[in-house]
Length: 130
Image (cartoon, rainbow, N blue to C red; front, side, top):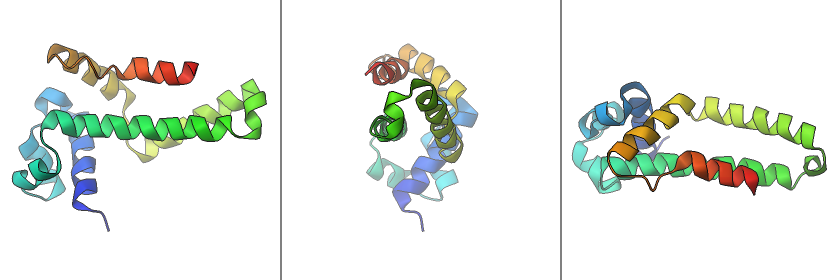
């Protein structure tokens, strides 16, 4: 059974994908999660903090994939490593409903709202480089 927090995050993820950051309201997210807007704000202080949590979770999951593979026997086999990395990342995208176009668009929208500190693509590139 999903926790209230998980329900809100799932609803937010789907709403952000369908409506974008601007179009996703906390009211719509709360309705989709089956909770009140007050409950949403108790768990997450704002719409931007909700989105930040989703992006942070995605970054953590991605980092875990890199770590697992870099500690495996594939670390010394670049071609196999990259194939496995792509496979694992694709599974993550499907399982967690991560829409890459959404992430790119959200980053652009966030810049327009003065939230440049969420330079997601740069953080992914830094992880890959490391």
